Length: 206
Image 1 (tube, one colour):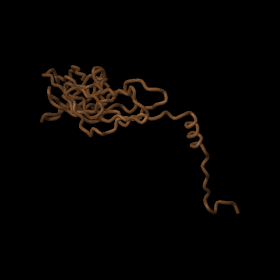
Image 2 (cartoon, rainbow, N blue to C red):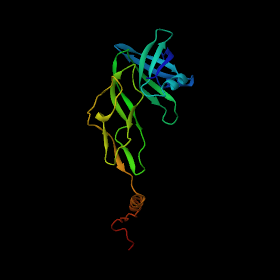
Image 3 (cartoon, rainbow, N blue to C red):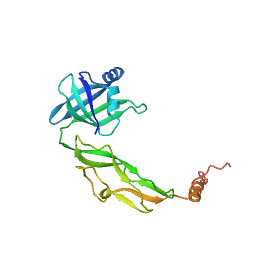
């Protein structure tokens, strides 16, 4: 879990024009809601926010207009389609001890011979965990796995207190044979064959 303290200011202007002015001022427009409270629109300092959101499922300690701080989970982060800038953020209020469902990144560890390749079926796993104890990743060890081996959700070693919300038989990854150079060359050659060009009837010159 990443917990960063950030001072926010409430927002009273809305719309695209107001959002652009907020970003030009070095701030990120956001909204915070949850636990039966009305949504509150606010602005967060862009630099501090960028640092806090370097990990997935960051939990921030937010104080609005100098008031009492509260914990909030970064639920939806909107980035600029070209730049790395954060354009908008949705925050969900959480409490210590509360359970939340989040997507946690999977990280493959361990070496494998060059004649084997890893086929990832999932890049993240959905876990129910305590809001203040969200793991940054779940490791998958592939050491010693042979060609044809598979790893399912039931094979994963989950952090203490974490519960997988899917089926234990869900496929996570499999080990396949690395294609030979001859096979790659054959596929490449097969994909570059010229396709026959169809001509429309009656297009020939008289």
